[in-house]
Image (cartoon, rainbow, N blue to C red; front, side):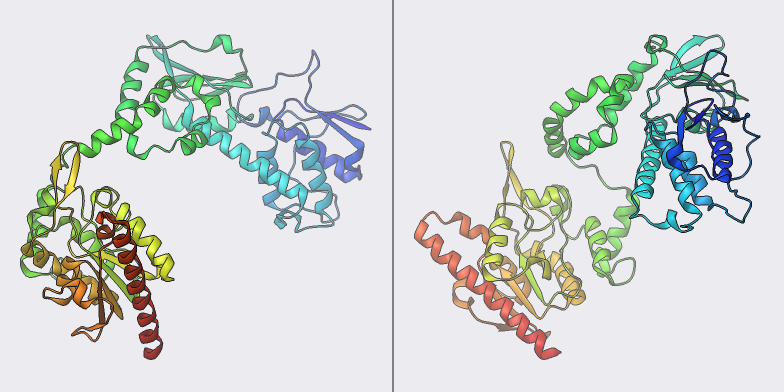
Length: 503
């Protein structure tokens, strides 16, 4: 058994020299024991610079290894790909006890399997790649979660304590030298310490957690800043814990705020929704006025649904924008054969920025499923793009748009129709029917049949899903629901027939 003792846990140069020599001698992986344990007279684990100072390995039954040379190696043309060297430099920083043996096993196999590193299904390669990714994540977390504290004011000196998941202190240190070039700082970890004096990066032995710096006056300022930028409306606790694992919280001054911020997130989000929207910049208003006057967007008609979605946000053709959170453009495939037109966004649609996602939207989705019409294959929009409502206590109660508001917004609906060019348009409710057909069209007298449109399309009028929710009588609600589903089924079949005939 050949015992190889490295100068430190991350002594890549020592491992490379020993591996090169052993591979040249034909020593198999099973005949080698790798260790980084030091005896009393061994050099320190960290010299200045990365990679443990390049101290070469010692082998118990041989002379000291020669100075490091490039990997390969056997004198018969055997060389290793650069990708393996890069992989090995990362894997050696992992805390797994078998990492050195794994790297030598890969080196041993590379002579007969020169493309081994390119095989992600190989168990050895897969494990090494996983280690490489874990090391990269540890470096990223160190860059993100190191917090410096002021320990001296004359001269101004900072220190930070960090416990990395892997031995990445020296690999991560150059980032801090670039990021905080004009500061004098030290990062303390259990593995190694790195210090920057403004010119030189120095590495020394790791220290005990008892040596971690205590809080400073700046941390309260930092917590105030963190609390002010925390967005409760975008809180995703699961994702937050993935990006900021709890193991790092004890070293983060802002971590003590997190439980309270999570607890109050829903209340704060509700307050944000209730607050009045900020007025748009003057330049946006001027652009809106241009297309409001001449029916154009930046001087031209919109050429895509994305342009419509952007332009409708600054529409000022009527006053509904003043009390709405945002405009709600249509949603769906760019050339859907079937288009559904509702009246206007509701309370939840106004907040989400998407059509038919509230209670009426749930009724609509269930009826579509019952009728066999996939919503994802249809374009869903509204005759009016802003939510018209009146406050009633803490609630915003729907108000029906008047004829002037429907007429003002019809330009956007006509633009969506021009771009999508649906074969069949389903008007959901009387307001939508007026916007689609151009005249008052009673639902009861016209539902259940196709109406011809000037653009050669077909229209079907039916109930608005919210109408079904308002019916107090269960029997009447069941009859209306059955008729609603039948109308949706008719629209789906008609769109399919017309589409097939056009092909």
